[in-house]
Length: 361
Image 1 (cartoon, rainbow, N blue to C red):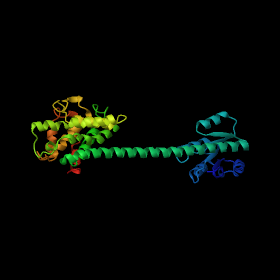
Image 2 (image 1 turned 90 degrees about the horizontal axis):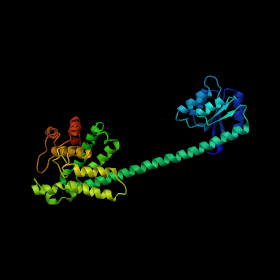
Image 3 (image 1 turned 180 degrees about the vertical axis):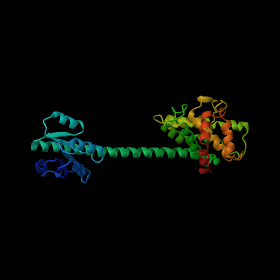
Image 4 (image 1 turned 135 degrees about the vertical axis):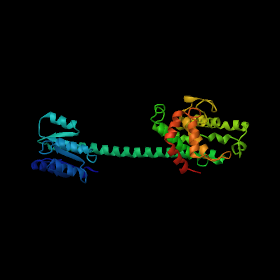
C-alpha cells in the first residue's frame, strides 16, 4: 500500500473544519469525512477500512472518547490508529485521550505541516505493524503445522511398534484399541479424584492413551512355542511368559537412552510395560509392588487389560459375559486392583461395554 492509497477518515461536527482537513489531505490520501460519531463508526466498519482516523474530541451526542471506546470494542476497528484533534489547550484532555488508546493528538487551529507529518508517521508505524503481524500469523501457523506432523509421526510409530507385537500374538486383534479406550475412560473418570488429580492432567492423560498400546511390546521376545501355544502353559512356560513385562520395559528404556532428552510418553510406556501385571496386594509380577508403589498409569492399565482378557475368547478359555467380568473385577478390589480405580470402573461400566462392542473382534 503506497501512501497514496491510504484511507484517512476525518471526523468533526463543523463543516469548515472538515473542509480544511479534507483539502490538506486530499492530494496524498483517499479522504472520507463524517460529521458525527455515529456516522464515523459506520464508515469505520465499512469498506475500505480506514487506515487512520482524525477524530474531533468535542462533538454533540457522541464525543471523541465515546467513538474511541466503540472503535476499540470491535475487532474490526480496534487496530485503526486514532489521532485526536482537540481545540483545547487543556493538557488533561490530551492525556486522557492517550490513556484511552489514541496514538497522538493535534491541536486546533491546525498547522498543515504538523498534521501531514503526524499522519504520515502513524501510517508508517501501522504498515510496519501490519507486516509484523502477518509474519507472526504465518510463523504460528507453520509451528502448529510442524507440531501436528510430529505428533502424527509419533502416533504412527507407536502403532507400528504395537502392531509388531500383535503379529506375534494373533489373538490380540483390536485388543490395543479397546485397552487404549478403557485406560482413557478410567483416566478421565479419575482426573478430579483427590488421589489422582496431581498426576492426571490433560497432557499426562494424552500421553497415557498414546503409550497404552505398548504395554505388551515385550511379547516380541517370548519364544513362539510359548507365545503361540494352543492351550494352558506349564509353570515353567508361565515363568518365561511373565518376563514379557521386563523385556518390554527394558526395550523402551533403551529407546529412552537413545533419545537426546526425556520423552514423556516413553517414560509412561516404560512404567506401563513393566508394571501392568502388578497387583494391589503385592502378589503380582515382576517386582511384587503393592498399593501406591504401583505407578498410577500401570494401575489403570491393569484393570483395562484384565477386563479385556476376561471378555475375549482365548485358546485356554471362553469369553466371559460382561456381567461376569464385572463381578470378577469388583471382587478384585483391594486385592488385584486399586479400590478407587475399581470405583471408577463401576461408574463407567456402561462405557466399557460400549467400547467392547464398538471395537469387537
